[in-house]
Amino acid sequence: MKKNLFGLTLADLERELLPLPKFRAKQIAAHIYKHAVKNFDAMNDLPKNLRTELSSRFEIKIADLLKRLDSRDGLTTKFLLGLAGGAAVEIVLMRHDYGNSVCISSQVGCQMGCAFCASTLKGFERNLTAAEMLGEIFFAEEIFRGEGKKLDSVVVMGTGEPLMNFDELIKMLRLLHEDYCLGMSYRKITISTCGLVPAIKKLRDEKIPVTLSISLHAPDDKLRCALMPINSAFGLKSLLAAGDDYAQSTGRRVTYEYILIGGVNDTEEHARRLAKILSGQLANVNLIPFNPVDEKNFRPPTNNAVKKFFHFLNTHGIGATIRKEMGADVNAACGQLRAKILV
Ligand code: SAH
Image (tube, rainbow, N blue to C red):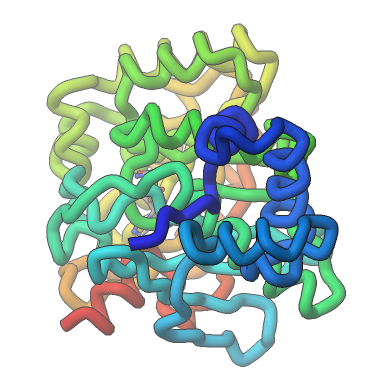
């Protein structure tokens, strides 16, 4: 088995390539991360015999393309990617008028058990490595580059709970930010969590000002416990305090995601309670009309309920946006493609 060099930091590369001098590691890092070179033979600033030796010992591998689905409007593309050991994860590319983004997965499957989410349908397999998460981003970057576009932002909002895979996540974010890699600003990165309070504090202590997005979905503990098992461990009060603390410490506004599910959490009374618990927070609410999942017994809200909910929040001091529906025709809700294909 050849060792994969993709996803190594410069320091790791230097160590791996010993006794080669450090400048060789720098050259190779530039090929891998700046020029998306996958083949040592193409590294023409390296001596020929070194290229041959490297090819015999190492490889540069991201992921295998298993399936591609393009939305009819061409704005959203979903990929199912194959990883080592037969695992498959999904990424979603979104082309907005304000920039291009990719939504990546952090785990194979998910163990958080949210009642409305397709990611839990096949259970939890394993965490992704930093290299695999970076690979998802590079895969997207190459697709965008092929279209003459640029990757502007990254959201960790696909399958899995990123804060359950904390160390690899942080390693990936730090590498992504390095100048020799994509040099991506932390402000262009969003981490979405179902609400692991201790890990939110740990993230704050990392002092990397990524945008934090908290999946709230309910304005009281009773309903939130019914929808999201994590709420039994960390209730709303401690979650909102952690969100507030994150916003104060980083100066970054926290986004609260709120899926509107027809007849479950979408009435004016829910909006009133939501506005109350968020009042005074440096926060935005992102309303997401529920994306139907065959296996789940929930329905989307009516257009009228969405409009009313949105209007209520905005007229009661809470900045809210409605997530533009993208890619419903490519099963863009979390875990839907993977759940459908891996039958
Ligand atoms: N575990 C993280 C990130 C993955 S989920 C988290 O919970 O935030 C990303 C977002 O998509 C979450 O807000 C999640 O609740 C939401 N989501 C899951 N299933 C959905 C569906 N069927 N329709 C709309 N949004 C969904």
